Length: 225
Ligand SMILES: O=C(O)COP(=O)(O)O
Ligand SMILES: [Mg+2]
Image (tube, rainbow, N blue to C red; front, side, top):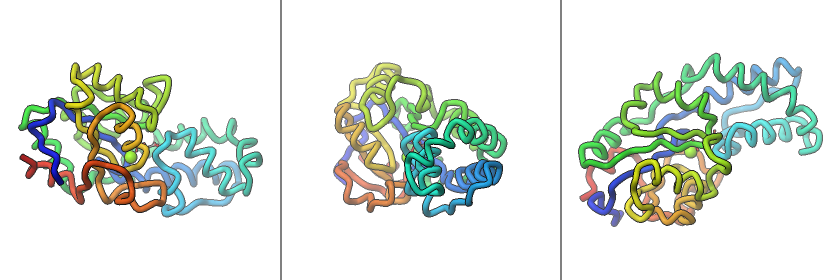
C-alpha cells in the first residue's frame, strides 16, 4: 500500500465490519423481531449481505427476504421497525466483538497525531453505546450515526461534515472502511480511502472495490510511513 500517514491530519473510521463484528447482534435482534411477528428467521450470511446501508434499509431487506417481495415486506415495516429498535438496544454489543488489530491501529493513528472521527450508517442511538461498551469511544473526537445528517454514505455529505467537525480538508483525511459504500462516499468527498479485507461488502469481494489500499488488520496502519 502506497499511502503514507504523514499525508494525513485526520481519519474517518467506519464502525460495523471495520471496528466491530456486529453480525451476531444483528441476527439476534432481527430474529427476536421476526419471532414476535411470527415470520421465519434469518441467518448470519444473509444478514451480512444486507448490512451497511443503515437500519431502515436492513429491515426492508430482511422483510423482503422473508416475505418474498418488496411490497409484501414493506407492508410489515411499520410494525417491525419499533420492535427491532427495542430488541437491538436490549442486546447491543452482547454478540459483537472488536476485531483484532483495531486498538493497535487506532492507537497508532492517535500517536501519529491524527484526529479521529467515527462515521457509521448505524443509528446514533445504537452506535454511541456500542463504542462505549467496547472501550473504543475515547479514540474519537467526534462520532456521527446514520441519522446525523440528511443523507447517509455512499453520499459524500457525512464525510464532508465529519471533515468540517475535525477542521481538516478532505484531501488530508483518510477514510477507513469495509465496503463499496465507504469507498464511494470517500471518492465523492475527495478523501483517500483504505478498506479492510474482513468486513461486510454487500456480498461482493472487497478487493474489487475502487480504493487506495486494503489491509487485513487495522494494526497494519501502524507500519505506514
Ligand atoms: O448499516 C449499518 O448499520 C452499518 O453501517 P456502517 O458499516 O456504516 O457502520
Ligand atoms: Mg461498515
